[in-house]
Image (cartoon, rainbow, N blue to C red):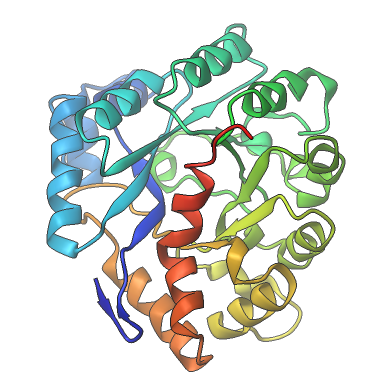
Length: 306
């Protein structure tokens, strides 16, 4: 894609894959037909995972995006993203959401990594009510360590699930489990595992930077509008966020993400342009821009056993 730094292959580290199973789950919780969910949200509901994969492939083509990490956005939906990756292996990386405390949670994580098509497990401790330092979660990191080229994505900070709010469904988020500092002991114990914190820590920016400073295997994903800056005690612009992140973590540990999710909106080009402008204001070098907008993600997910 053409950028202020020239032609750069863009790899998006954060795209939600809202499969038919995702919508069916919402419909069952609300007690309404799936079509009604689509009407309330004004979103398109795909007929199949393959149709959705093709829609995302077409959207990336139109936007000039080379690759995207697709996130299965409910626990137990690994197969949907795995099928998308199988259909377009040169365009998609596969991530899956997991609840390690579910009866089959750990077994599903181990199976998903063993199948080799999925690259990242996404943990939402505040949503599923556990600390990442809980010994019961340790097998997650052991599974990732056994499969080089995998990442563990840990959502920290503020978590709001807009789709549930629109449908009148409760979100039982427990913020006690949302601090990035909880990941410190884990990241130190598993130095061979790479961890990704989305949204710059989503309000825990200071803590995310502390974690990055102490643990070289922790990366920051830049996705979404980053509206969490309003919680900071001092006024922060996005360029200030990028500047501090680069000062502490370096450009090698930032992963561009859009947090795109549904159709007909598609890929969030405005998020991309806003981040482009922030980095341009900072006079980031072409080499660093190339890393942030795709090179780092591609390197992380192509790691092999040494």
